[in-house]
Structures are given as C-alpha cells and as structure tokens.
Image (cartoon, rainbow, N blue to C red; front, side, top):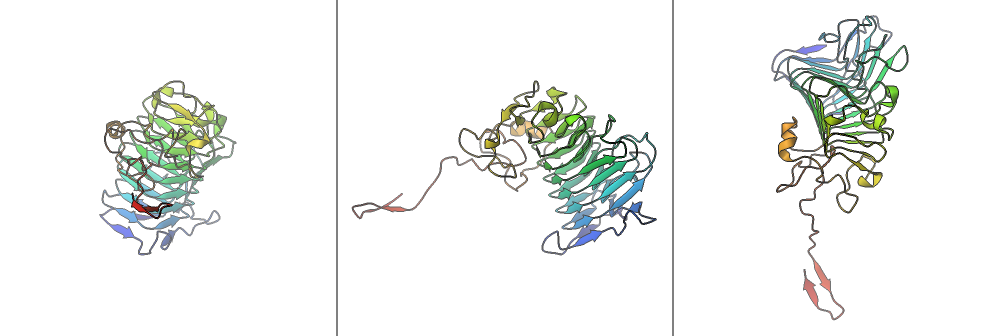
Length: 362
C-alpha cells in the first residue's frame, strides 16, 4: 500500500471522482495478493480526494486490531481524511486464527481519529475461516473515527461455516466499536452477519442515518444490531429490512433508540419517541421523506439541534447537501435526508386574466 505519513493530499484531477481510478492489481490467484491494500493514511492532514479506489485485496492471519490486518482499500490509522471518493470492491480475508476478535473492513477501516465524508463505499467483502470479524464495507474503531454523508451499499460478510454465529461478528455494512460516529449516511443492500450496522461495544453513535433493504443477517438481524447499552441510535430510519423487530433493529437494547422510525410490525418497545411508518412516508425509491401532508411523518420528528450535536453529529448538511437545520425551534427530520419545509406555505407569483379581461397581479 501507499502509506501517507506526512501532510500529503492526493487529489484526482478529473471532473468527477470516476475519472481517476487507483486500483490494486492483485487477484485471488496471485502469490503475493495478501499485501495489496491501496492506501494507508497515517497523518492528521493526509487527504484522499476526488478518486475511485478499488480492488484492494488483503489476506491476513494477524490480530483483529493490528493495523496491518484490516481495511482492504483504505486504512486510516493515525489520522487522515477521505473525501468525495468511491471505495469499491475491497476484500479482506482472515485465513487463520479462529480467535481473532472484531473487525476487518472490506473497503475502509478507521482506527481512532479519521474521517470519511461524501463518499460512496460499495461492494466490500470480508471472509473469515472461522466465525468472527465484521464490517463488510466499513469499520469505525475508537474515539474520533467518523463516517459522514456517505452511502454504504452492497457489503458482504462470509465464512466457511455458514452464517455467522459468533457474538463478535457484525455489520455487513458498518461495524462500530468505541466512541465513533456515523451520521447522515445511507446504509443499503448489505448482506450477512448481525445487522447491516453493528454497534458492538463502547459508546458508538448512529445519527440521522437511513438503514434500508439489507438482508441475510444471522438470526434475521438484517438492519441495526445494538450489542451495547451505551450505544445510541438517533433520528434514524430502519425500513424494508424484513419488517419485524428483530429484522429492523435487533429487538434488544431498545433504550438505545431515540426518535427513530420503523415499519408498523417492528415496534421499538422502549427508548424514547420512536414510532412506526408506512411506505407512504417516502417519496421515491431512495427513501427520501415525504415533505407534506398527513403521511409526512419523518418531518420535524427528530431531536433538537442541541441534542443532534450532543449525540456526536457535526454535519450542517444532509446526504443531498441540503441544510440539516430548520429555522426557529423546529426539530430535525428523521433519516439521512432533510426536507426543505421552512417555507411551508406555497408562494406563487404571476398574473391571472379574468373573464372580464382584467389582469390582476398576485
């Protein structure tokens, strides 16, 4: 891998992040495939921007928290930022040592201070010869690790003994351990292990995220799995992950959920201000919220701005780049998308011609 230990910025010069592609050349048949991660960031001002990074391939039998053992495409270990990038098709394989605990991170592993923002993180894969390891696409590990305004899609977690049964597995999309934060993210279409998002240990925070259409989790845990009572899931949507309490939010540690929306068959029996919605609460196939009418259940149904910050969220914008905050004392919208409803009354300017031929401005 290319190890950035200084304040170095690598920025794609293309018009879009798809124009400049940095990829590993390894395949499963290569004798030296196990060392083909693409980037390692190890400085607080190291930056990757406007790139596509793909096909990292890492095979290891080392300890789960070893810096060399995780992050197929990108490892942030000692600081750094990945912004406006695509991380695609990273693979991490633990081929030995059944006692490895915790995380892998097919596309991205952030240990301690580090940030991924405005990225698409897709098609990551992790595999373990035994039954542990998590983070098909992303691992956030420790205080300061943050994922902001990212899409996390199509992550996969496999092992050679079938579906994961080991308690420290989790997160086919995102695995969270410690005081880390994922905010304003869309987590969609991930499969395998306990939850598309696993809040495993410490005090992780999942804030204003939309977790939808994930599947294949052990024991039916497809959406969010909370393994620690100190975690918090705030202002989040969990929908179309199977429809039951187990499928949507894991049916445990209900007190961790605040101002969250789930399907009508997945009541969160605990927590605070959680509620049920139907598909009519969304306006499109990307699960953007309906902004008006009696079905607009996600609008202003979240916490206050102060609570948003108190739970670790810092983004002023939603996933679409729209302001997260409403005027006055109105509460935040639920999920990764906000609705522009500050001017709720429709303002129309123009002219109308009456039957008498009189033109009137309005």
